[in-house]
Length: 106
Image (cartoon, rainbow, N blue to C red):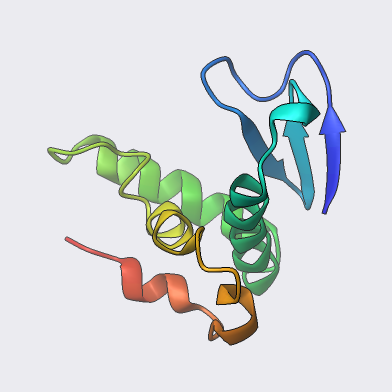
């Protein structure tokens, strides 16, 4: 995953964001191995859903979760999988395809 340092992406308050296989950050020196693992999980999810499907699903799930009593961002299935496994160094070696589906919840 290529790390792209710039002044605009991600929004303030976030350390990094993966878009189309690139990791964008405002300060590459602050990107940790944990962040790279988290974003690498998103990259795998993205390729499984053929890129466009990932972004459509992400947006739709976020909008739906805005109406539920919880943090919409943290409860998106993609984020739940990434946060739950970002400390597992071997997660991507053992992860099954479409495993984010296990993180869907009501």
